[in-house]
Amino acid sequence: MTQSEGQFEPLHEGHAIDHVLFAVQFARPLPEGAFSRAEMQRLHNRVRKMLPRGGEEQSIDVTVPNLTLDQPAATKASISAFFFDRVRPDGHPGIQLRVERQLITLRHTQYSRWDAVTREVYRLLEEACALFTTSQIPPVSVGLTYLDTFVWMHSDGPPRVSELLQPPGRSQWIAPVVYNTQEQWHSHAGVFQRLDDHVRRLVNVNLDDVHLQTPEGEQRRGISVAIVLTDAINQSGYIPTEVDPRDAYKWARIRFEMLHSENKRLMGEVISEAIAARINLGGASE
Image 1 (tube, rainbow, N blue to C red):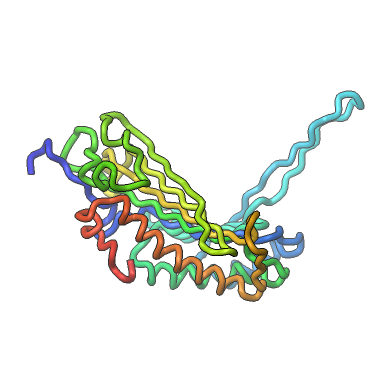
Image 2: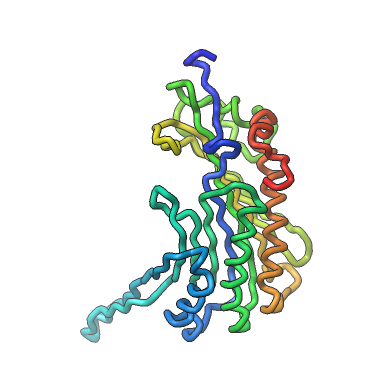
C-alpha cells in the first residue's frame, strides 16, 4: 500500500468502540430521603469493589428578582447527581455509574465483548435500580448508545468515506453529501418507530468526520459512528403500560439485550461489509 492510498483502522485492536452508554429513566424523581448523601454512601459501599471512587455534582438554582418589590436575586445550591467510577491507567474513567433524581446512566470506555461488559454493568444497574424500587417508582424508558470510531491511517489526505461506509444510495442513514466533499462533515438521521402498541423507539444515527488522537497519541482524522436507541413506554397514542417497580432491573436488562441486537443490525446498514468483517460485527458476543 502506498502512502497516498490510506485505509481505515478500528480505534482499538479488534473493535472500534470508543464507549457504550446505558441509560434508564424513571417515571418520577427520587424523594429527598432516597436521594441523599447517606443513601448514596450505602450504594457506594455495595459497589465499592468495582467502583472505588465517588463524588457528587451540584447545580445552582437562581430565583429571578422582582424589581417592583425591590427583591434581590436568590441562589440555592443543590445536588444534581452522584457518581461512582473506576479510572483507566491514563486517569480517565473506565466505567462510571451516575445517579440523578430520575435517571441512571452507566458509561463504559473499556469495551471488550458484550457479555464481559454487561456482566459488570448489570450488577451495577441492579444495585442502582433498587433505589427506585424501594421508592416504588417504575421505569419509563431505556437507552443504549454506541460510539464507534475508525481512524484514517497511512495517508495525510482527507478520509475516503467509500472505504468505510456503504456505497452511495444504499443506506438510508447516510446523507449523500458526505460522498462528495473533501471538508469535514456531519450526517444525522433519526426516526421514531412503533414497535407495538406499548413501545415507541427513537433511532438516531450520527456520523462525523473528526480530528482525533489515537490510543498511541497520534493526531489523525477519522469517522465516528454514534447509534443512539431509546425505547419508551406511556407515549401519546400508545396503550398505557406500567412496569412493576420490583421488575425495573429485569425489564431494563431485557430491553438492553434487544437494543444491542438492533445496534448491530443498524451498524451493518452503515459500514461496508469489509469493515464489518474486520470488527467481527456478526459475532455472537460482540
